[in-house]
Length: 296
Ligand code: GLU
Image (tube, rainbow, N blue to C red; front, side, top):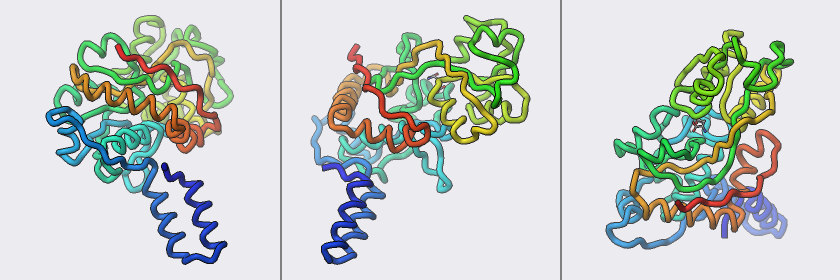
């Protein structure tokens, strides 16, 4: 049984009410804080990618660390968010605890290189599945579908309602991302300002250095929720961004395994719970219907 924070708190409360040792209650609460997914006892075929990861005793995960709701480093430097929870669900099904996950920051442009260079085992980082990327790496998933949108200063002083309104205006995005590429090819009249991470774009918008920021709606929603006096979401998505989990090219056993884990998490509620505790908690949006996994 999965231990949810809420269930554990209730259990602890119940134990106290019935007069059982409060120590047990404290233990339950401690467990809950450390456990978002139950670690499974599993065995993998010798020589499989999963067996190798288990043998190494470590799952190396590339993720974002500056995107509220998906991957944001807390004060201790540990990333938190929906992508991080998805990585924890995968680790648990490998029989690895959260302590056995090593998170490495992957900004948008170094996701494929980090997989190619064997610096990470998987990438869970608001990573859109597309054919160009599939030339270099493979994807499990999708586990979420976002859409490109625009964030402007609160009050929308420039009256930007969609990508056409970006003509002649400065719009910030990130190198190596699909939203930057879409502006470059489909909206060449916009003046694109590029950084390596979206938090720098948000800073530029706050300081009035750019008129807008563009990337996936859920990433922007996280920034708006963090500073609603400064930012506003246009709320007019103009692409589909199916989020996948990047694996090294040709590692089909790992890709199949992760697809199985995702489908299970859609079924058993752990995916929805991960959403509600992270991106959903920030934005107030309920978990959507899970997408259909694409076993290409
Ligand atoms: N989902 C888009 C991408 O993978 C934008 C978000 C990001 O840069 O991480 O490029």
